[in-house]
Length: 268
Ligand SMILES: Nc1ncnc2c1ncn2[C@@H]1O[C@H](COP(=O)(O)OP(=O)(O)O)[C@@H](O)[C@H]1O
Ligand SMILES: Cc1ncc(COP(=O)(O)OP(=O)(O)O)c(N)n1
Image (cartoon, helix red, strand yellow):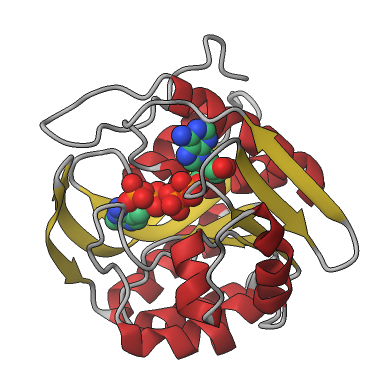
């Protein structure tokens, strides 16, 4: 007897957050909430909690390649999302794997955690610019990552367009510049260099925002896997992350996570 039809399959290539708020854990929770089948390639393990990152250990490149091949060659993927890649060697290996995969790729060029802990070696920045961004369907840098990659400091909404042009110059098809670190409304700019979509949401006065970036990128990948266009996928993802931030909750002594299960009736 055959079972029910399989949901769209989405693969995250990212690091583990032991506290469960960001990284692979946030990605898989987002995927479940949005009705897709989530799968993971672990790149690194972090000892992490609401106060920050206490330690990080990278996996060998063969372990990352083997996990990726196991998933893609048998199960198949309708979208890939990348997060913490840690080193130049891993950035380059993952870029090559994505280049050989026929599925859209959402690249979150994770550089540092909310608490300022490094999640990418500075020696890997050039590989992100020249190898990873060119294979991205959508890149989702926050303002610290824009500064690391382009030297542009975004201080207000007016600077978002200039930042987007600078990131697009590295080759992703689309970019979402996340204005989450500005003040006022939470405004992001999605553009491919010709179309512009401004995504505006009220800023929630909630300090429990751990995992916002991972959640947004995984939600975009989930919606792309369902066959939505990039602008539709990013709009749906923005609504999902905004709801998750609105119901973020306290855990531990520091910054708690967004609430991935905030939607009462997940699809499927
Ligand atoms: N306090 C907030 N209220 C509403 N939306 C927010 C808030 N903080 C961040 N966002 C939104 O969350 C998403 C992730 O942005 P950001 O927090 O900048 O990413 P990162 O986690 O990579 O630093 C963006 O859509 C941003 O606009
Ligand atoms: C293992 C791991 N990956 C990525 C991040 C960064 O997550 P993000 O969603 O940007 O959330 P904050 O760190 O900004 O809260 C992470 N912390 N750990």
